[in-house]
Length: 319
Image (tube, rainbow, N blue to C red; front, top):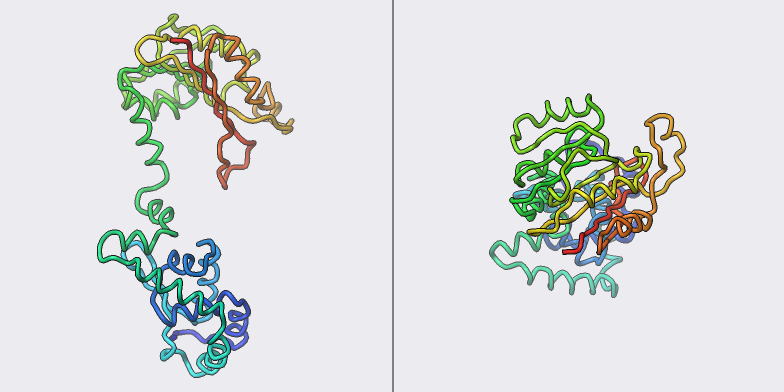
């Protein structure tokens, strides 16, 4: 493989120390392949194949090129410099005839046979990379924002402890009205500034334990990362039940908060009154407030998140 930089022999030898990389090179010497296709032939995770391809590319064994939003890799033995070629030929010869290589070639033939000449070919080639492709093209939030469209547009939603308006920003454009409630004037001011262009959001200052919202006047109530700040969380859940109505298709409460943890410093640095909750305790409070059905689940952890785990608890009033 032609390269503009000098690659030390030790680097080249080191890159061939993994048997998997040798199998990868044999595949790419036969056919130009995507990461997903190599992973399918070798029956390995795409992330593992990507790591091996990176090592081989840095050592000058393979080339790559973008095709649309995918990346294809190949190895051209005739383009190897003399030093690399002298290393590769005896290695290649030693691999020929092995059962493992024969099975790889059988799977390679099957993968190549699955390449129709239409959009299915594209998705077949980049299947292992599709999440990265979508993120590069569209970002990470579009699925969540699209799913919010499943909420009936006639709903009135109470965003309790709205803070600077994260939930209201997402709900405001798709529902009839959002009542954003918070006890903190600075938080409400920040939310007004942020959401001033969404006319469906109404801002109300007041305590969550005695909500300034009429009884049976909203279809859904959301309380996200708030209960750990409140002295009496059960009272807040009771207020959620009070303001919900069961007419039309509403009557649902959603609580998102931290799982139980031992980070005592949160009491002093952020004013937390509770060190998270057991989801079962939230469900118990919901049933006590009159919610006929409840559902709780732990949320997947974000790799970049440094805080405790989170849960979501939903409750539905009897219709």
